[in-house]
Length: 121
Figure (cartoon, rainbow, N blue to C red):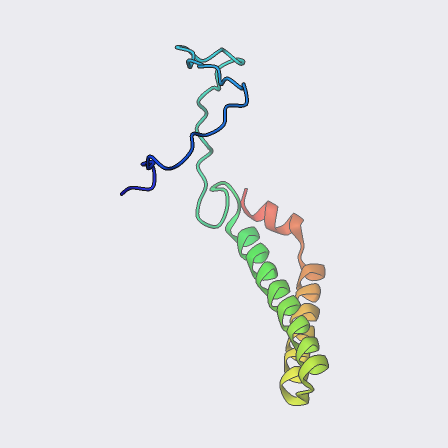
């Protein structure tokens, strides 16, 4: 016996007077606005736009890497120090993170964008 089959002993379901209207789907969808134009994206390299100077891309991605390492190591170092009390591991991560942040800030301040842009011409 399947769950959908009713036995003769079961009462019929009550009818509350609600009728479900039979709604047929429309043949054609309504026009909701202008068509979206097909636009090809600009040709970009793996690390950035193709027309960007290589020195600028190298400086940008090295700074991104330094700041990411600095933020991650600093936050993990503080968490290990506070919650686990492991002075050697937490302190080491904290020192590495602060060094990476300081070195990234130093390299950012030292970066001369005018020299990088003029070398590409």
